Length: 77
Image 1: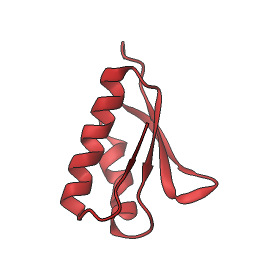
Image 2: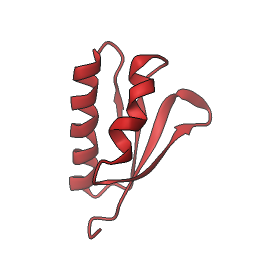
Image 3: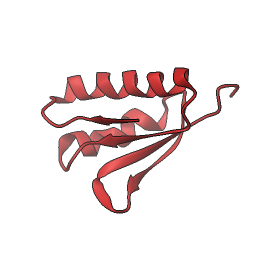
Image 4: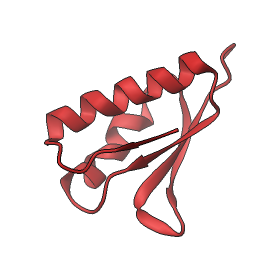
């Protein structure tokens, strides 16, 4: 699954990221891709993800630095 945050303001993007991560978790997905481009959303994304309960880790997509892979904890964690 993936989400594209282009065209959203910072507040909308943060809410959508949290919804997206929750959706991944409840569907039992291990990974998701967040497309964010370059700018204020990209700068804030690590802050939103680093302490979110379902997020195990995240990294920039090597072939597209305007996107980030998010890896989730297993459902039992």
